[in-house]
Image (cartoon, rainbow, N blue to C red):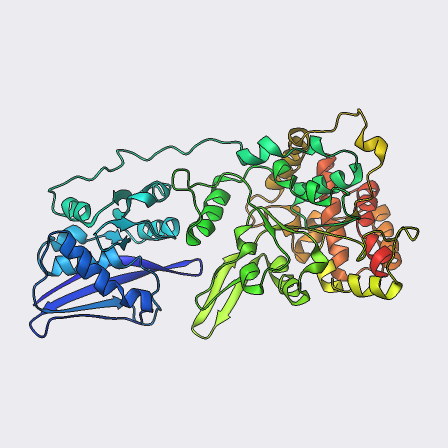
Length: 515
């Protein structure tokens, strides 16, 4: 009788759980049996492992092979357990010295030929392995660069089962990293964005560009309303070019989400720019928020740290939009299942664009062909609670010919980005030591401290509260936006002009929705 254990891991939401792959070989009927609350793809690992071992020129004896993946209370899914299962079986046979597998985490999918295929979720798994005291991680060669982003643990990338055996038996040294590869230095903006998209390409629309600058400076949600062809989508797609680069910690968080979805670049896995996710209006709730039998991050979490853009907002199913309300407020997604809850990050800057009516010409009654009831029905697809989550609402009017053909030099993204970065640095210093990263993340309890008003400001906000029929949430939104405008202005205190501009971004509610 022979018994061995190999350490592996599985992902549950954003959380990594260590899995102990136990193998026992004893006399009895020749069978390869696996237990441990397994999904169908994990159960199929028995045949993949058996065939891969044979193609690695190792003959399995005609004995009873029992494999258990512990803990049995955790649902195991995916093919990433193939390699640890194979090594556990070979260690039980005595092919691999058991001591070589101590404090070593193993993960990887096997093909029938014995080749090791890449798997998803390597970054959080390697971080968990390091924190658990492992000194080495054996993983697919295609995942090695991603795993190498984690300091303090050695990466051994293997392309075939034979290489893993050779490393553990000291008969072959696979191509291993001599040292940790340096991270590629970038300015934090994706190359394709800076090459093709720039605010200098947007003619006119100075008020809309100002709103986009304020939104970017404070991480605020932004709603653009205007006729077709007014540049709403054009401006929204350029917002990432004026956002500050993510910090190293933010880059790792963003990369972790993409790693779990298997969407990182094999050669340059670290995401150093702000994500931009544009979602079509046919998106389902599960695709937007995240979900499935075993939930995975949705588009909202893939936009974590960046921008989620919803074009043609009124074409989205109302139930889908309402699902965004709680995650936008809490900046996280929690999905409950009978077997537990799953957490995903969702600190996004939501940008949405829509037409003012079905034909797009309202309030120009000379061109608008919609009846009042049609306009009301169209606008009612966006509820008041959803509107309350939008920090800035602004109109994008039809572009005048003189603006379109004008010779005035428009500001570039780089120029706007400098101001945004200065404002963000002010916020970083102000909120040092707290979990707040930008003004948009301020809680209601923080407003009295960070958004205090003088007597003139209090009087102004009282008038605005009554005139605009503000809710408590929209009142707080105005204060946060005013704090951002003051930061852009380099002012330590919120002044009356800052409040007036911030309140101006709430007047559109009354114009279109009559609220």
